[in-house]
Length: 218
Ligand code: MG
Ligand code: ZN
Image (cartoon, rainbow, N blue to C red; front, side):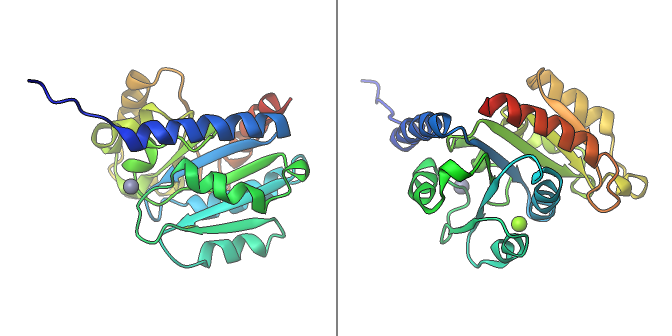
């Protein structure tokens, strides 16, 4: 007899994710799930987004880390409400954690919540956390084979940010390969080439993100 396999945790996660989505829709808050490897530049990019978007939107941040609060402290310096989520060893954020954190925010006073997911390209992509939008960050030094190796991350993201683009002259990084592979599995993906360090491409990315947030909350 065939053995039935039940994916209980993922299914349950989906229920909670849907619940968060409806709650945030009522509150007109856009949740953005930001993913990428350790060192890809997630925290720095969120810092830039806060600076670039805070004249238009009221922003909150959830900082996911296995432990510690280094990144949350950086956000706090910018004057935005921030909650540090420590997963105590877990390598991704689940919807239940977001549900538990949301009461910490005054949702009526927010337009956007950026969630910095745990740094890895694997399981964060498997768990919806009630987000309206996903941003995957891939930095040039990580290499141009990541879409092939970690397809789910790039298949499920709305935006792909190629960060540290100023470094491309120092690496054998075939950007056409990355873009082609990403579009093959995700035809609607938007790709941005940016350097958070030199600010190249940053304004264009912020403008596009701003439009999408506006569409979501109106
Ligand atoms: Mg970080
Ligand atoms: Zn994980």
